Length: 202
Image 1: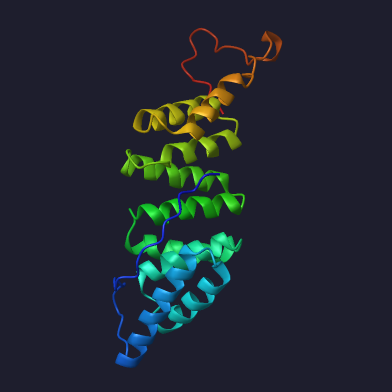
Image 2 (image 1 turned 90 degrees about the vertical axis):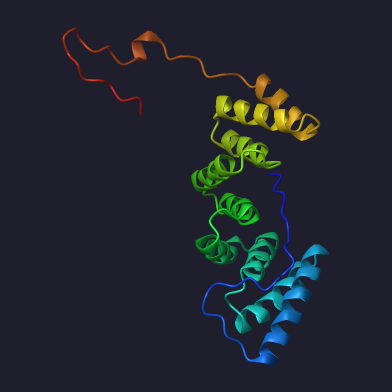
């Protein structure tokens, strides 16, 4: 899945209740910054070590928790990433990078429904965000939701006509065989005349 991970410079944006001694504050700032550098260099284990130490000193730093969650996911530790990403979103529910990372984490944990719900929320809040519709289409395909995937890919290509991966995937979706309707003998009988009850399409 193509998850456009981003790191954020760890500017001092924190949840309420953050009081550090000056020495600890300086130490935490250095560790957050070092962790961000390691993350950009794809040195995930070093990034995690630095970010975890910073987190012990300053657990409410939102950008730091976001980068720690991303590093844990990229180091194939999605169960640990979940806590940090949810923390960020509790204070900043429309944080685009946190939502993308959370969706990827759910996907890695096999929670496709949660991944889809997260991406659908992102597309609703930020309909023009690059790659959001593409990732949503990939998630839909895991559930064989071909029509939904097609619509998401068309939205992505409308926003970004040069998105080669989306165009390739759309062509592959068009080549996939659609499910044939069930034979008449297997279909549920229609409601009898005079019966106003509707049959739910489960």
